[in-house]
Length: 125
Image: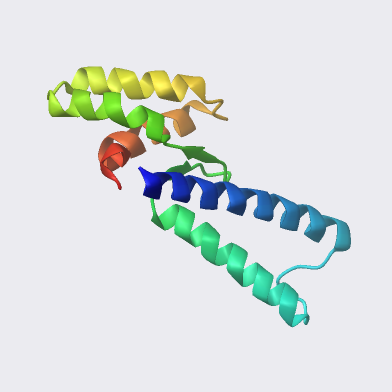
């Protein structure tokens, strides 16, 4: 439980940092290719955090780069349905979760559903 809270806080911090860095990059015109060693270091840190988010498989990334999170609050019900072997009810539950997000397309929504059902994020600690 504490680990998931810590992951959530780190992820939220990353998103705020990334948003601020992106805004600054657009305003100043500087980016990861500049000569400034501090800016290069910051860019590498942001890239490594982005890689961690993708590799930890706690978020589904659409083709246009939007992230949709599997939240800890979904775990208990998903775990109960999976343990009961009720695949149809589990799929319905995941569709209900997906309906709460605002996906850009139906294929993004279906991709999220398939990602959840195949990856089983409720089993991650």
